[in-house]
Picture 1: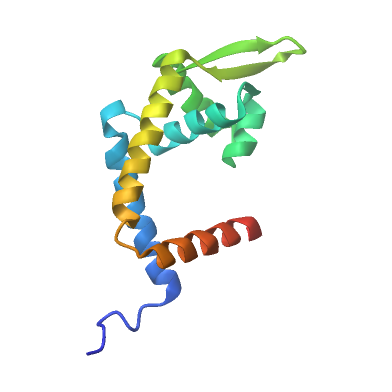
Picture 2: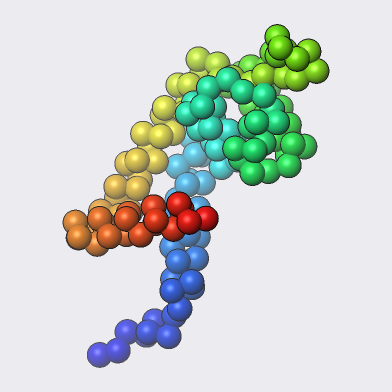
Length: 141
């Protein structure tokens, strides 16, 4: 019996899964009242440490104005801290606070649990192959 989605392209299937994962991500972030953009900032700062706003914009691949808006929101919540850059008084450094580190760790753990459930239906071989293919595509981008 033919699958009713046989006419679905690879791109359509990929974007369908991406939409499912975005929805799952939003639901996962709800307990912390954090948006996906906020979570990305927390993750980048956790991974790379203290950095200038301009450097953070580059990591996020978004406009500096957009970075400032996200940082403002996280600063208001006490999840990040701004301070002057001692080597350039015109620049501002941002870093995670202890609360920011705790929330980032909790988000990572929750996302890992959700991902395990989402991808857990795959066989070990499919899981390995999908991981390998996605990593390859990320390196090429």
